Length: 125
Ligand SMILES: [Zn+2]
Image 1 (cartoon, protein in one colour):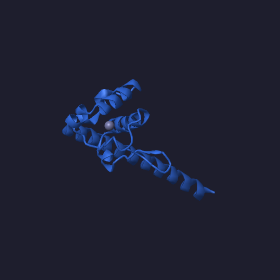
Image 2 (tube, protein in one colour; image 1 turned 90 degrees about the vertical axis):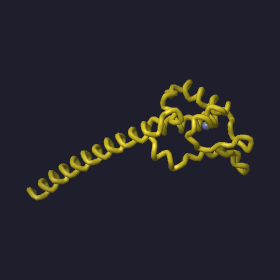
Image 3 (cartoon, protein in one colour; image 1 turned 60 degrees about the vertical axis):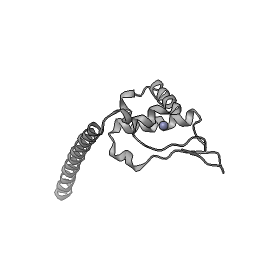
Image 4 (cartoon, protein in one colour; image 1 turned 135 degrees about the vertical axis):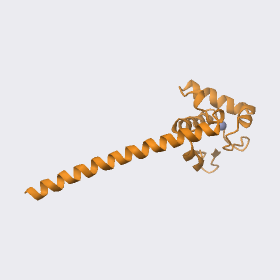
């Protein structure tokens, strides 16, 4: 997170590693980053890195404050990826990806079915 000196705007960086996490963790992290913005945790005195390490997380009071605000907003503390072991995160992500692939395949089948109906109607005319 960075406050841009030229405009004063806050830039929130979301690393590509987020794509490797289950959606509930991504939601939590994005909310957590916005909690830092809401709490004014930006600028050179705050140094952040995306490190899913419970020790790093638990040692920083600003991390605790951001997590408390996220929970106040209605997010579940149990979705915080720093407290979910890697194997569980990976399994959840694989299950989500498989479910999404099945949904896309089902949508493709429905689209193909509609196209076949459309072609059949065109031929009849
Ligand atoms: Zn944080």
